[in-house]
Image 1 (cartoon, rainbow, N blue to C red):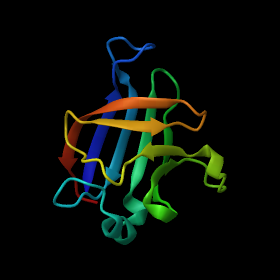
Image 2 (image 1 turned 90 degrees about the horizontal axis):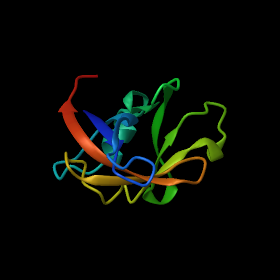
Image 3 (image 1 turned 90 degrees about the vertical axis):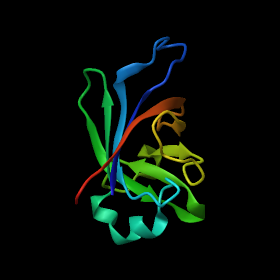
Length: 123
């Protein structure tokens, strides 16, 4: 299992990016640094996400693997699928420092984040 930190990349709202806006996820990666669907099935409860956004309260949730192979961050335990932030091409993107990842947030905005760190953890 890995702890992956992604921070806001440069964009119109954040011309220098932002280390105060992003996500930390706990997820299994395979030997090629891609999200591991079987590892997720074996460790589903440990696959967590924290969305940090400036001074706002952190959002806590789970990494979920959806039908068709897509991935999302699910925050609403009541099952409201519209509350998910969805990863764009997470199934084919390597999770290594320096790479960029797109996330379509629940409000419909698509934002780009840079992977800052990927560390081994014990769960």
